[in-house]
Amino acid sequence: MRLEGKVAIVTGAARGIGRGIAQRLAEEGAKIVIADILTAEAEETAQLIQRQGGQALSLTVDVTIKHLVDEMVQHTLQTYGQLDILVNNAGVMGRKHLVDITEDEWDRMVDVNMKGVFLASQAAVRHFLQEGVSGKIINIASVEAEIAFPDQVHYAASKAGVAMLTKAMAYDLGPLGINVNAVGPGTVDSHGRLAQDPERLLRYHALIPKKRVAVPRDIASAVTFLASDDADYITGHILYVDGGMLTH
Ligand SMILES: NC(=O)c1ccc[n+]([C@@H]2O[C@H](COP(=O)([O-])OP(=O)(O)OC[C@H]3O[C@@H](n4cnc5c(N)ncnc54)[C@H](O)[C@@H]3O)[C@@H](O)[C@H]2O)c1
Image 1: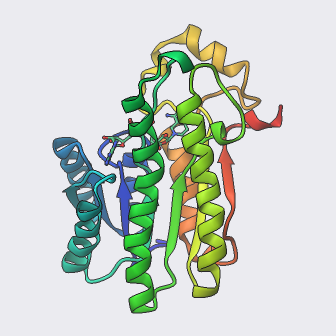
Image 2: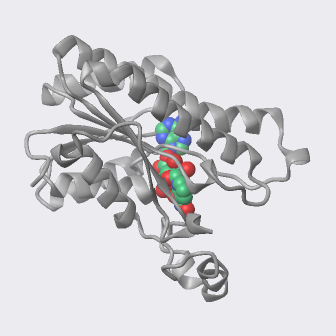
């Protein structure tokens, strides 16, 4: 119970990696706010946590809309009376050749993946500073902040932005007692679909020294560590959880 007495917001926790993070933080004793555009699935995550004996609340939030993000923090404070941890996990992915990416697709990618991190962090940090909270922010980046894969220029650029946003926020917020780190997943079987596609799995295994793709719990374990007191002296770090993908 490393997070007993803490309150965490996890964005994009209606499904996939975010759901895994929310469940894992709840197992460690944190009360969880699940913020996502998918209302029904977000509520499902909350109920899963409640059935496991945890406390969770689901909110419908689009992280690109400032007043909804500000309300997310207010709602958290009204419900649980505090906020200690923010996990910026909400993200969109997409594969398209550079010449086919529309302006709207570029804008959405950058808005959700980068502006969403900025808006939620700003709202949380205002609260941390007001109440003197030594808050923890954990952003979900990607190995694509470091290496390119085909047809993902907009995604890769947005995740490189998340990596630098992490370092720049850590620099500014370190003196104020707030830690900002990122977890950079490699390939994650977010919904269990990859496990059913042996040919695709083999193609991924060729890139991964550990010879398996990640599951949401692998990412959640790293987030839990960075959210805990064990990581008090770690800030501005991007922890790649990639089975060794970035070794070559
Ligand atoms: N799956 C992978 O292999 C992988 C690898 C590296 C990084 N990541 C990152 O991990 C995070 C989670 O990915 P996932 O695989 O679970 O994907 P996913 O699509 O299953 O989950 C993303 C969640 O974010 C939510 N979301 C999207 N736009 C939103 C918005 N505007 N406001 C609020 N919520 C929004 C979605 O509704 C969804 O619940 C993303 O940031 C992704 O870029 C994933």
